[in-house]
Length: 286
Image (cartoon, rainbow, N blue to C red; front, side, top):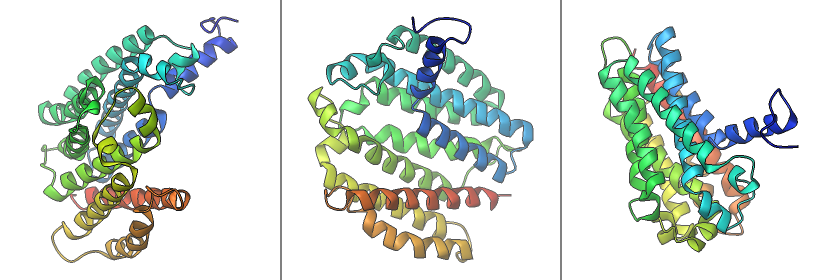
């Protein structure tokens, strides 16, 4: 049965599922959820929080779709059977059309929040597209992640009434989390990337050093979120540090074959701790 059949056929459903997965669904949903929770915590307002969610979701979807569109030939060369273009479910042309449509939606919804939050949130999208378009192949591959994830909390906070400026520690923590996400996200694909000429910063550092740097960035984000705000650390902040220290030690072993299985949950735990602290930091801005 053709994959593009209409009327709810198995082929049509497979295409819809493949398009959803091609957004890089996990990271897209995670980033959108964090932005939405931060907007709610920062008292952006109900209707504007929904607008933030739509803007961020559209931007992230466009980044995911453009990644699979631009990498279609490379994915085919290394037989990435998890990719819908390699499976033959969707074409690069369809992904290109979806990515460009999502960009238009991201522009409209971001600027509807106002000039300042609009430009900041679109900076996140620009960073993702710049990475996909070529920076991923250079030693500067970390840069778009640092910039984009630093701009994300700044844009969300700026969407609140009065266009407040996000504190330095919230922006810095976002950037650190973005850097860690890049190093952790690329780790499983190091060999496939190397086979097709992609040599970003993680490829140059190697798996062990990349794991150490990612763990260090997550630990630094924890410290910034706990110690950055005015006044003494809160009780949740101290609890987070107690949890983060042993998790940081285990996470730093992610680059070793022996401890990789144990390190992954530690990385996820550190990430969750930092995200919770990030959202709590937004609530403290009220």
